[in-house]
Image 1 (cartoon, helix red, strand yellow):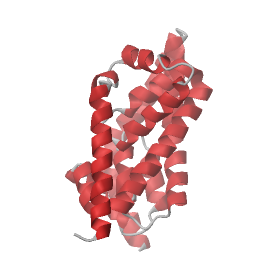
Image 2 (cartoon, one colour):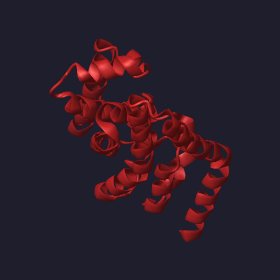
Image 3 (cartoon, one colour):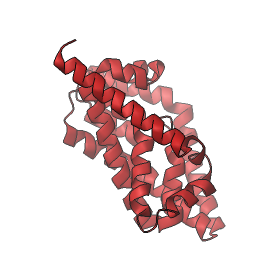
Length: 226
């Protein structure tokens, strides 16, 4: 084993070890599925709760199976729609960057252990080129596995800055909607909450019903443009 391979193995072991310790030491596997426990956990770190919240957003991106919808909702619930969106976005940017860099540094073997093989196979067509437009559309559409996409894009030729712009802008609409939902729930604005949830539900439903067709259209467009 050469020095570069040894370094990659050490980095991989470090992140897996730290992540496993944090998840089980703080019961994150339970906290991330319980709104009240997550709110109490974040607020217990006052006056540094904003930092903890952003770190949780980083964590839910890097450990992709953790549901990001919960943390996005909690951001709006605790901090309101504006600050909730800002704090969530900062955490998502850092988490996306870290996932992207880990994939680029550790390569395909690491991504294959992180991303579901079916998902990796389904989206591997965007690795043939930089795919900025395609990646943006996938980040923009609700329901697509955005955290997994961060790892997949790390294997592409896309530059870090292009990726950060694409992923940040693409996630923004969903982040705003989750923050607004959280704020409505906190303030008892159930009428507005129902409207936002209805709009979000329609977007997710349409995406779910037509996701395969859109994916095929993106593939054909990419091959036509190549």
